[in-house]
Image (cartoon, rainbow, N blue to C red; front, side, top):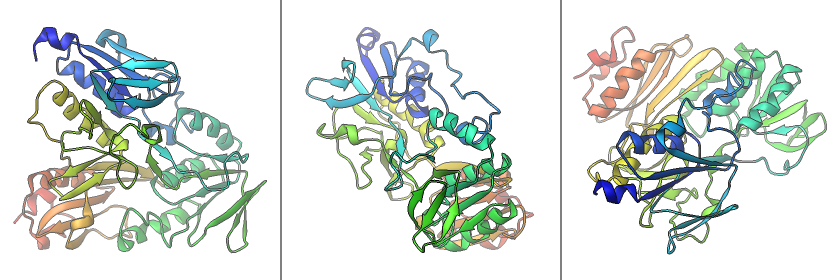
Length: 404
């Protein structure tokens, strides 16, 4: 693509979170000379989400705006403007402020939290996804209310951690039989159950919410839990309802179906971050990854393809971390295809790692308080290195020294 042709092209990015902002930045870093516009539904300056459940929530930080000089990069921000639809035949994005023309369109609208049925509009029921959510919850924690957290997943554990740090009485209710039931195998999640009690939080499993009444949560067994506030953390789904009728293919979880260069089913339309799934050659299946690192890495592939570099494909080793109950938990890979599970260290202790292997090659690992295991393991997964299982289980031996 000539520089003159490129300068006339318009790239419009829908979504001002990590994936959207990084796409715009990557375009400039890779030399794109055309117009770059980022459209965000929220009125706030684009911000990072992980601090919302930590520093922002506890009042240790006022915000988490990205350290990006949009003006000097020539990136136009249109904030407080919701996207309503795509008209591919006209190459236009419909927004509440009118149509925006594009030559290339990048969908980076992320995911939206699943609401607890029957609680829409109920006073004292909160979600934690946006800066406004965190700011509404901050005074709740400051007043040290009795808090009920619905859902013992990653976000539920992180919020429970913050609430206990703020001095709140916390009860976590989980419909499944254990924390992280949808994310980790039973034997791996089991050691995490005791973390709640150790932190002074009450964890109730097999506990499904029937309804929320003023000052309490009623469970389906009739028991009642005092609740000055309720925080719902039962998962998220791709924010793609607005794409209905656009002709863009959506998957079983209503995510945008992208290829290995993050192109959608429509020409000149891409999808990146939490709203998109992609085919993984490494794992032999389509992945939908709702984590920060995916939103950071994918934009480089999108920018390269827009610029005509068609050799770059997107096939990352997924990675995420969680800080909960005084522990730093990290995960890399995708364990669904593993045929062997091995432990490094005792799960009753402060630091341990679980390794998943397929044909003696590491495909995933979960590290609790062992960041070196994570760093080395991630590189071993990327390289497809054959491991020695016997050496691997020795927690004193570096992972990189446990190869076959």
